[in-house]
View 1 (cartoon, rainbow, N blue to C red):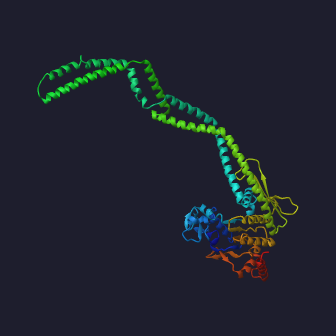
View 2 (cartoon, rainbow, N blue to C red):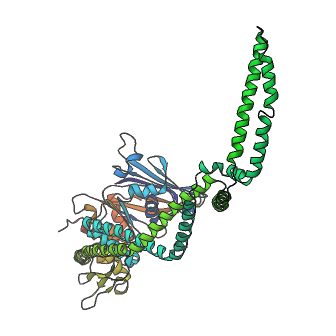
Length: 558
């Protein structure tokens, strides 16, 4: 719960501090005193949008901070060892972006909602106007329906997301069908063209050399024959042989002579082998027009592939692998497109089943909520009003929240037909219906801190007493766990039920209007209530009336 709320430089409030406790706390004050800024501060601490226009004129910063005890479980990572309370704060500079602090550390503003959102609930002014919206009515009914319904709704939403994704994919595939067909034809042709070429970088590495040999076969043969003859026994081999024979006929024991003989013998042997190799080389270079044409075709095919798919053969093969992978993807999409209609139909059928579960949960909850709200309306001086929740199942296009249209209906007077809430009730009646619904929901919510900003708009007299009693009961809690209920009000009848009473009041300091919050002690309550009743706060009649209200509020509930 909130132990303390501190506000500085927010709106007309220069500096105010409220110490809070379980039970009903009311905040009162003259119109324009700034009591609604208390609710604004709490909204900021829940992550509401900040506006530099909220900063008090002349101040550099607006601050809202609260002490929460015990710390919410969601705040575990922001706590130090042994911390038994948590400080949350929101700072709004007059010329910059707002900042949030949790446990004294800077934090994203969204963390405020994560930490406090489940535990503090604010019902701002004109809540009854929001209550007229169909989406709000559906959300409130879902909250009231309980955990089992929440799980059914979660399952439905998951199924809805699956169905929507499949339906969108089918639509996308249908829209892309022509382009996909063109890509399939192109990729199949390209992969087939490259595969038929049977490229082999190692085998094709000698293609240019083989082409050159075949194209010049006659010249190679002639050159080889001439060279072989020149190297043979009738050519260069004869003088080398004569030289070798002459050296061998010398019979001397000289290492230099032996070296010359060996070298001459090596030259003779090399010439003989060279002549044989040259002759063999020429003999292998046979003219083969068919083979030449075949290699020329191969060269042309490879050049064509290089022009289309890459600068070299490895690049062409890489392109082929990429094209093959993309082809598999498109073929998979094509197969998906063929089977997607059935999958979409199955997902839609599953969605319809879950929508029925959600509808049943809402229908049951609608009956219970109607009964509970009717009971609260009786306590709020509307004993003859009849509240209904209509849940109509729509067979049209599914939505994220189901196929139901939820409408809150009210028959404010006997004999009148139930009509939509916005049409069937006055402003004061809608305020009471809003309070009755919120009280009904409070019994199923985890929030232990409830904040109401002028929920008593448009009512007065005995009805205001009923509202005060209802809020006091809400603070006591039907589950044995007391709540904190904070209510900004202008009605003395409601304020009489408070356990703690704060007055927000204006004054002058250094020529400027200053607003502060003052806790009203028990012996001052009657005087403040008398002022709120519109009379002279010191008049005996007004004070006596105020004391009667306090006595009535303190009477034990039956």
